[in-house]
Image 1 (cartoon, one colour):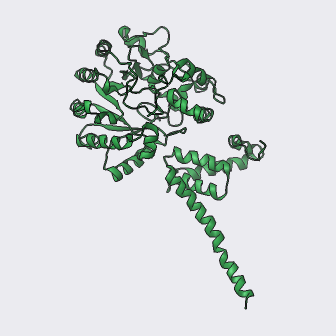
Image 2 (cartoon, one colour):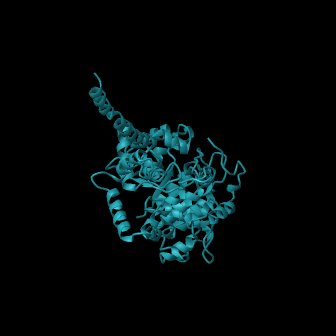
Image 3 (cartoon, rainbow over the protein chains, first blue to last red):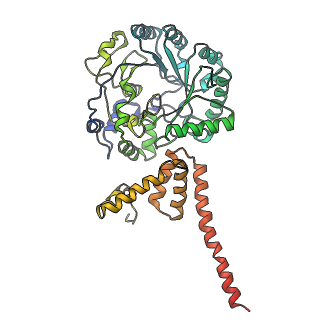
Length: 345
Length: 110
């Protein structure tokens, strides 16, 4: 298992260094210029339907493509006080979906409290799960807790074979992921008619774009059922964002310029019009507000004139805010588009 | 180093339209239709293209269709088998001409 950028004191641990690299990419025009050609510059939010909470950077894995630079040595965790501010803000709205992410969000001591409070407000709750966390001994009963609260599981599984999955997520992760999915299936997750959703996330294991979502979903469904007897609801294909540890991989493997050119050449105006930041508010572990989880990791806060912290939450001021963009945004607009809910078009 | 092949030239493929726009547009329209989802999936067609790319030993095609196969969800085991299919057909096509050699030997020999 590799160490995080920050623990290796790698220059790419700095968001400023990442942004410098992104703006210096050759054969990749500024994202804003591309948006302008599609008549979308400046990009504005169109209401908020997803309230995404990143509860911290602590994780039991150190995946090679992680945009958070999460890992076991990270200590950043959302406190109960900040979690309470999130619930207070949420209660002032009718935003239907609460999307909890990390790190491994379940390892935050306030995770279960947050889930219960959001459910008590009648909101759909999504847990962005790495699967292996469900097998950790201190987390006994976690899967049952999620099922009893009808939490939607969005679980990472880059491929239906171990070699690719382990190359991205660490040795032995595939085998544990299958065990975790089998456990979820036994609880009714991913089983037709149960109402418990198990959706998988596929990120390419390398410097290339994901397959078409419907084709990849059919392939995963066939292979996971045939090889492991596992079932799931939907597969979301998500493009790897050229930031943090995936940016490190791109640079070290000599793929950075080619990948950025590929993303820019695959710019899809329809995908740009439907990007998730237009419908999402992202809250960081300290309560700072962002347009998306990627901007959060690049320390790109909301545009001037909008509330910057969850304690100042004001839906009217946030609904139509101008979205902050940079060249990493090409990751969400390439090909079929990419979002936390998979392809956009 | 000077070389006849430059990887960046692949992105200049469309410049072939400058000499004869009509023929280029006919070709590119046909090309797109060939690789569209049909009785065969886009993924299967990309694997066939990868095999053919090795048979005709086109470095541009190998580059493009290796990436295309990955982006359509194929894995390296499937792609390796596609290359072996190309290899078997190329090798077989040489070997089967051995029958011609044997025919000549039979005719010339006592």
